[in-house]
Length: 83
Image 1 (tube, rainbow, N blue to C red):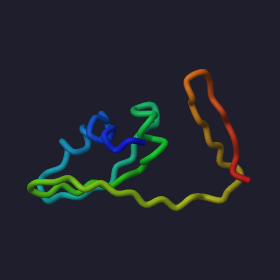
Image 2: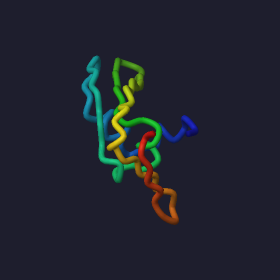
Image 3: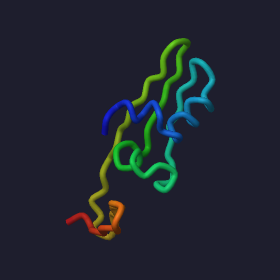
Image 4: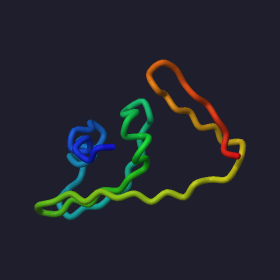
C-alpha cells in the first residue's frame, strides 16, 4: 500500500481527530469501513503529539485452522483457512 493512502483513509482521519494531543490509543475497525486499509493495518495504534501523528502496528497471527480468512477483490471473495 502506498503510504499516501494513510493520509486519506477515512478510518485513520477519524481516529486522529478522536485523539487529544499527547494521547495514544489502539484502534480496530470493521473491514467494511475501509477494505483497503483493513488488509494492511487492522488493528493499529496512533500517538498524537503537538506536531506529528505516529502510526504503528503489532500483530500476533493465530494458528487455529478453524479461522476463515476472506479476501474481497472486486469481482468476488476468496475464502481460505490457515493450513
